[in-house]
Length: 415
Image (cartoon, rainbow, N blue to C red; front, side, top):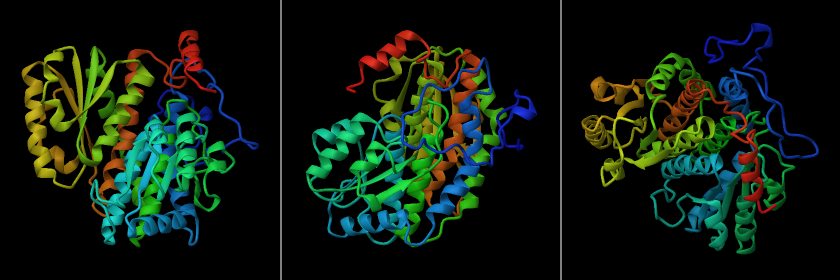
């Protein structure tokens, strides 16, 4: 296995090659079963994280083909944006965070060519939670579904409702044979092709961000350096020792708070979901300013905190409030750690992050949102995996190997 691997415990002859393609979706389409149980790490999740740099090269290479699905979705976005029609991305769970991140990427790309890009501006891409979007579908315009396997009930309801209201339907999914793909316009289905082998989805988070980056590159008419993106993902994996130190510092926390601002907010939400799925540690996301308005009384020495700051836009203002938030955390004894781009790390004194920090490259050649979201993706995943090791939990089945939680999933499913 490559030096970037987080897999240190499995014999060499059993380690999958991280640069080999992952298994594709079943044909005919079928939902995945519970991941095969392993007695200890490396988990399936571990191997999925390690595969992501290679996945990035393959997927971005496929999606850069002229007249391909990414280019057609970019054209559909441009058509809707030019006349101020809604452009809405929808998803649930990890896919909702993929939708939030993809909206950040697409807004930046739209702004680069003079299309609507500011939040609230007609025609600017926005993300909505799928259930809410199903209840109030946009009238006309374009709806882009994010669904790794393509079978999420609420997401498919949102796509059906939007189609009935006159919207065009695009989709980012692993298989064009999925139920969601049957709802979408066939020419607007972006097939990512490689299936996450863990239910604690990591590939399921990175894949739509990569697809959105390819669409954004086509929309903005500027090439995207696939090697640079893969290098960013590999950099996060290579910080495994830093992630393990942070995990050790936070492992005894009673609950965890994750803070983000700007393009780092989807990453903060995703870290919260990953930690709760993988380690069962109660966690919550707070926007940077929101954290300082009423939430501190519920925190103390048993609270862990992870601050994410890779966003380059308006960084000085974000850094100022980050210092205030971390100083407040220190006063009440919160164990604070951080995932930071290099420039942000240089501006925040180490004493404000006593639980450690993971420092990542800036990637100035990449669009800001792409650099922030893909720069933090693998580091938050490795941190989660290390927290699972510290807690002695198996992240792959997201606790559905416990009959109570399996039954909870069954009774909550409309299907």
